[in-house]
Image (cartoon, rainbow, N blue to C red):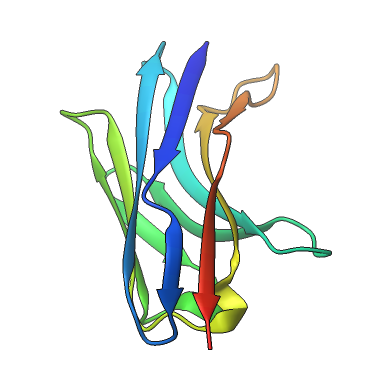
Length: 120
C-alpha cells in the first residue's frame, strides 16, 4: 500500500503563486509515475502534470509554462510549483501514484486532495 498526503493549498489572488507538496509513504518500490490531477466544481478530474523516470515531465496544455512538477526521491516527495495562477486554476488538487504496468494491470493511489482557490 502507498499513502499520499498533499499540502500547500490555499487562497491566492490571480497572478500569484503556490507550491503544493505530496508526501509519499509505504511500499514505494513499484511506483513508476507520480502525477498531479485536479477537479474543479462540476467538472471531471483532469491530469495536470506527470513525472516519469528519470524525471521526464509532461503537462496539460492549460498549465504549460506556468506550472512545474518535480520529484525528490530521497525525501519521497513530489512538488507542484504553480505560478501566474488564474481563476480557472481553482480546483481540488490530488496527488496520484501509479505502479509499473504488468500483465495484471496498474495499481494507483490517491491523496485526499488540497483545495486551491484563485480569486480574480
